[in-house]
Image (cartoon, rainbow, N blue to C red; front, side, top):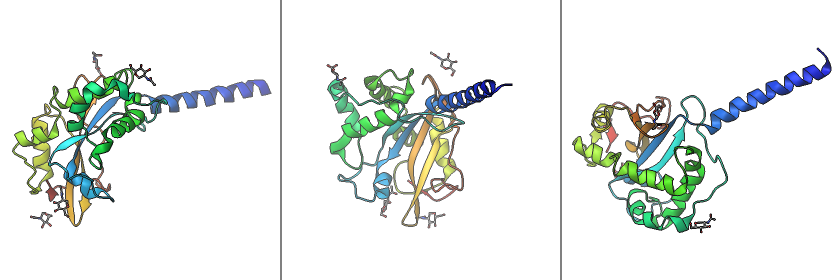
Length: 228
Ligand SMILES: *[C@@H]1O[C@H](CO)[C@@H](O)[C@H](O)[C@H]1NC(C)=O
Ligand SMILES: *[C@@H]1O[C@H](CO)[C@@H](O)[C@H](O)[C@H]1NC(C)=O
Ligand SMILES: *[C@@H]1O[C@H](CO)[C@@H](O)[C@H](O)[C@H]1NC(C)=O
Ligand SMILES: *[C@@H]1O[C@H](CO)[C@@H](O)[C@H](O)[C@H]1NC(C)=O
């Protein structure tokens, strides 16, 4: 093989590697819909939340994700077009507040859209569709973790819970699908801070969340002693 042949081979090999790497980081195979428990979020904050938190789970974000590769982020330069979302704002203020600073809700949705939402194409068509999809999932599709827990008789009473009872209550509201739980340690307690429900890539059905926090993670929820 001549020198040109070598160069050709090496170039092709590199192109192939880059193609594989970029397709796995830009694509996605499922969605995470993450809800956060406001009082626990405020407890984790370095600066106190400006308004007192509600004892509710509200939306953190809807994230295109990958089972076996990094989740895509910032897939394309974009900004949220604020002039188009007026009709959604009242509802989003309730279900998707910036818990740290509610005067900044629009900024929060914009950051989620720019970092995650834009990567959800073609399931997510544009910025307005991203926000509408979140509303739809929380309301019509009933992926409202607070309601789901409440139906399972788990109310936010600051009690010591087992992981099993939390999972059981959530599964009973999600056709048995396994959620992803996130806990955090705070002043000697372990608090439930986030619950993620997972859906297939076209958002037509719930699936078992594939990627749970490992026991070695600071966010792992232990078997017993989970505060909610
Ligand atoms: C937040 O921290 C306070 C004070 O440490 C505690 O009383 C409260 O239970 C915590 N909230 C949650 C949701 O764990
Ligand atoms: C935002 O949306 C409005 C109304 O649809 C449109 O007129 C305007 O050009 C858009 N702005 C940008 C920066 O895309
Ligand atoms: C959604 O995705 C599933 C598999 O991921 C596929 O079987 C189904 O046909 C898709 N539905 C639509 C409407 O594209
Ligand atoms: C909750 O459980 C933890 C760990 O099992 C324990 O240390 C703590 O004392 C319990 N708290 C209450 C209020 O029962």
